[in-house]
Image (cartoon, rainbow, N blue to C red; front, side):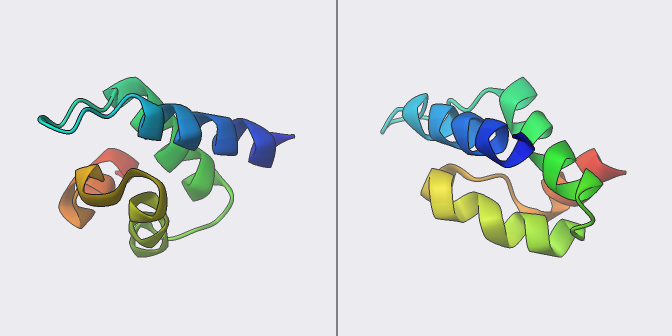
Length: 69
């Protein structure tokens, strides 16, 4: 169930992107990061997963690391 919810959030995050600006919703992004972290993934692993969905608009590794902390 959590995996489905995370997939939904990733798809919504991808759908909320505009081509011109970084318009990702921080709350949704943080929820996805928290989900993967609670599942036992390291910040580096989480950072590898995010660009698969949000492409060039994914937060940087430093941002993921700070939000996990």
